Length: 417
Image 1: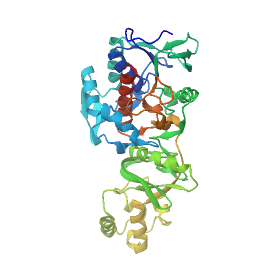
Image 2: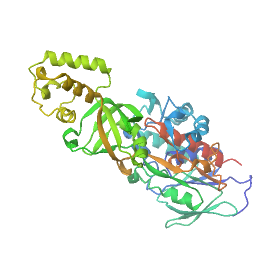
Image 3: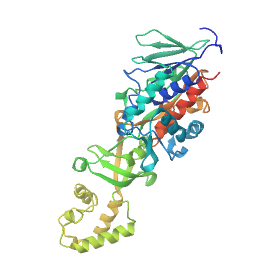
């Protein structure tokens, strides 16, 4: 390979055609580099189409480092500030994507279509002269004295001055993210923080789940180990035939997954009535039972909570006689009902599988990457961006912002002399 010369554009190969890869490619090409984007699927941006329930939650206006996780979350600070949420919105507005802001600061395209986001990114790649190669699986990356040689499955090797790895993590393997990038990074000497599913449903050890599956409500949940609350979240919660789901649960799943690696039981505490303080709930129940003394226990809560939950909830509260009239309830029985409405505990046995996960926790050790450039500290000329790095965000646009920010920094840095 010829020595690098400022008279010739840098040849950059990007491995992985997801959000971070596309942003890296567009940014590097805008800086004058000759860019090739490799994707092992038959099309780029496959996972992007699935984000935000097909609407693409671009970013969040409430961006803060507290929404990011990993062994060293502060690693994300530099990139998130260099290409922040406002710059992300401006970038996509320039590409033609009008935006709107919804609850919790979530930013969506006005079209409500993830496909429109992918369309404008593909147009920009083409306009910038990026060569996009699909069905191109990289099997090996070898560093040479001048640059790199990439071995492709069933294709001729590619040479590059610089390489950016943006292959994602292991979440949603049906969309192509199988963790293959970790193997490439390991061969080049990088350490991997063991990946585990994040933003995922939780499996529970309860015999009555099929009776309450499909019940959805606005409530709160906590992860508890040794009677200590480790994480709390409020919002929509959904019971399933295997456990519990919903945005509030997704926010807690990373903590649950970490704790499941230990020896102590992991519990999720669910509050069905999150909008009332404890004393007001007790007053309300006393009034409700007093106004319907002839109603049995099963019917006395109909209209207050979802009726499919009532039999299981009463049994868990230790009230076996569901036909007992409200007038005959002892004070301690009323207290049991009040307690379980705000403190219903389930033992967590596992997270759901990688196929169900929205994000990956773990990845390439951040201590081996320069945070200001996304360049490897071990292999000069090798860069990383996106989910492959040991940084993951909360639900609500934070993971995509990390992809845009780290992709922008990696692309800019790789194209610089």
